Length: 203
Length: 203
Image (cartoon, rainbow over all chains, first blue to last red; front, side, top):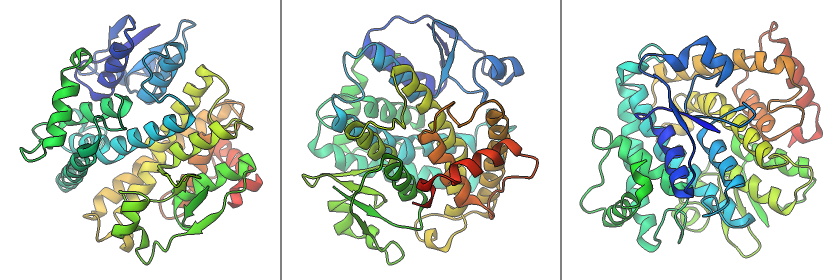
């Protein structure tokens, strides 16, 4: 296997953290995103038609993309420690929490940058008001998440899961231009300190 | 089990189609979304803190939300026919395609309505230019998807999966105000006719 990666982007970091938590050793090839290597016809034909990273190349050469799809494949070949749930019902609850983090937090932080960062100016119509709205929604999600974490150690419950990975990556990406954990958000701060102290967070 | 449902919304339809494909018989309770019943403190406390539908109430009363989390739970208790993949690798590929349909198509159709429909005016800052951009991106996805379907029967390959459900619901929701299958998009038209002919599409 080989992971096509780019250090500065949030989705590759989700997969790198997942790999680190699993203790897997997967060769990495950095794609020159700033130079547009992921937008070439060759990359789209051979790796991902959407021109997005990360891509996991399987041993037979098949390219697999979409971060959570890659994580689910890795969970199937390396089940321990479980990061996507431990049985049918728990898998569903972890998915619920991961999706909440994706659609309420990760998506909004991403939309802020899509609407403001020069690197996206060619692909998207950038609207300052859409960036403001994305920032507002991401902060609203943080306030809610602080309350959620009042009575649980991790986002999806008592175990570290992919929902923590998604939330951590979104918050780290968004800090400080989009959002910030406020001093009064003590549950969130405690959680962020704990997940950031895991060796995988350096991935 | 009980499904909290609303007939006019796309996410509940995804779950209803999934249930119909499984041949499951799950009691349904309609929530008065137009009257704001899903935004009440009671609904948020007891069913879904985000105030969104659908919600599947399990037999012990636990509420499960997020459509694909609900579908994954149903797949675990009713594996046939498999709609989320048949083995570790196939599950990952189906997830990849479902996520492509969600993030490139479903999300953009949803953002169009979020930015234009009166029912969302209280919750979101509505921007006509953001609606235009969402429409442009959803149409770009349709053009790509037409090419994808040139050499495969369904979105994720030879079998009907959740990726077809997501694409069908997004396209039907978006037609004709956001997007439309163009006469020259013959692969897409063939696929849409086939999935619409399945009894589940009436769910």
